[in-house]
Each structure stands twice: as structure tokens, then as C-alpha cells.
Length: 341
Image (cartoon, rainbow, N blue to C red; front, top):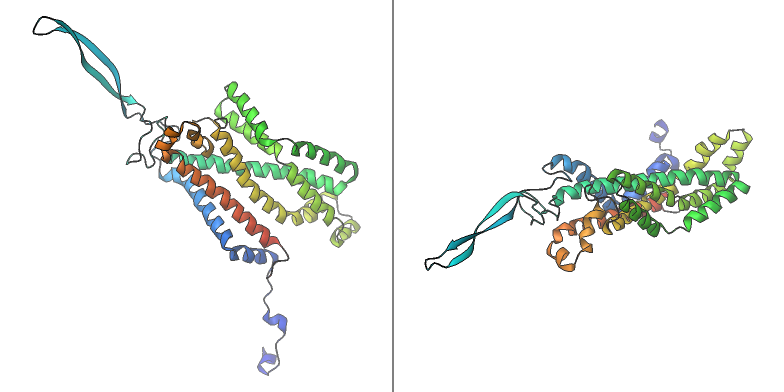
């Protein structure tokens, strides 16, 4: 400070604020308007799905409204008219209020009405978001875990290990995911497997069929990184295999892995929605966004008459997929070292 007071020029590095890599990535990400739109949308969807049922707890996801009126009995009585002729007439009808209030229009008791089973559509929309979003995250995490382990081993060891793992990944990459999932779901439905077991099987199969792309990406990155100078220095210092892989190689693959996971979330949600739309996903007693749009498989007059049963669900699916893609694109640009500061 004394030298500056005497009129000496300050150095350039004193005036330039150097950002850390994490701060630079965050700056690039938050500078993108689409990324911010996607992030805000995801926050709203998560709050709606996980905190919404706590606030709006009037109806459970599998609690049917039985306040509807139904005519159970029509009795016929015989009588003689004034001219002496025998006649028959309907005496009265017995009405009960213990039947399903199905396909009710939106109103005070049901914000979005009810479906054909008497379930509150608004409550199921929130509970459905819980399962669909959680399923997407769990599947993507498991896919990434398998892909990182196998891709890391293939890229680090090379030779026959690389050949074996890559041929296995080629086999899994050639398996058509959606037809296989349709077959498995149809078999589970035919065997009348309970809802939670069916959900776990779908989760496991989606994870098993989706790791090949992650493994190839990780393997390619590690093949490039292991020839860098810092890895040669790690070899010279005699670090163990675990420290070299988990302390030096995989952290450098993390940015690309995060982008891949973010973009893959939308695909998992769409796959679950497709299975639910075809009636082969999670049973109706457990709400998901997929089985809520199953009404679209019915005749046009049915779903055209009750748009409140599927339009809000379709909007949530579209918003979730778009938001994940926007966030993934923003992360990809933020991690790109060629981007300007």
C-alpha cells in the first residue's frame, strides 16, 4: 500500500480476480437463461411432489372417494287400478351413497376432479411425481455406478480386460430397451406380481440395460487421461491402483459424467411414462405420471370428456424432461474449457 501511495503502478495480477474452477463453472452455468429456467422448474416440481402431499393431505394416492350416489334397487309392485285391471309399476328406487365418485369434475373437494377409480387426480399428480422423479434418479445413479466401475477398469488396464468389458457392453447396447421392458412388464402383470416388486424389477432392468453408454464414455476419457503428465508422475511416485483411479482419473471424468446423468434422467422418465401409458408399469394403486396418462388408451370420447385427468400429468412430464435437458445442456457448456470466462 505504501508503494502504491508513492505513485508506483500496481501489478496486473493484483487487479485481476482469479476464479477457482468450481466458481468458473458456476458462473458459466448461472449465466445461461435456459439453465436457470430448467433449474427453477426442477425445484418447483420437486417441491410440488415431495412437499405438496404434506400440505395437501386431504386424499391419499389410493384413497377412493365413495361419496357418489348409485341406484341399487328398483322394485316393481302389482296393483289394481280403479277399473279393476291388474297393473305393474315401479314403486321406488333405493339410492345409496357408498359408491365410487368416479370421473367427478373439478370442484371444492377435488381440485382436478377424480379418475375412473374415484382417486383424487391432484393428490395422485403429486404422489406420481415422487415415484417418477425418484425412479429416474435411482436408475441414473445405478447406471452411472456400473458404467464408472466397468469403464474405469477397461480404460485403465486395457488389453484383454478392455476387450472383454467392451464386448459385454456391445451386447447390452444392442438390446432394445423398450421392447424388452414391455415383455418383462407383461410377464410380471400376467403373474400378478405385487406393485412394489414390479417397481423394483423395472428399476433393476432399466439400470442393467443402460450402463453401456456410460461405460464407453468413461473408458474413452480414461484412455486419454492416463497418458497425461500427472498420471506419469503418479506412476513414478508408486501410488496404488485405487488411489490413481479414484483420486486422479475419475475426478477428471466427473464433469462429463454429471452431464450424461442429467441428460439421461429425462429418458428414464419417458420410458416409465411409456410403460405406464401402455398399462404395463406400476399398478394403479401406486400413482406415477405414466399410469396416470393411461386414460389416453381409452376411446377418444372418454379422454376427450375428462381432459383434467391427463393434461396436467402430460404438462408435468414435458416440463420435467425439458428441465433436465436444459440443465444438462447448461452443465455441458459450463464444463467446456473452451468457453469464454
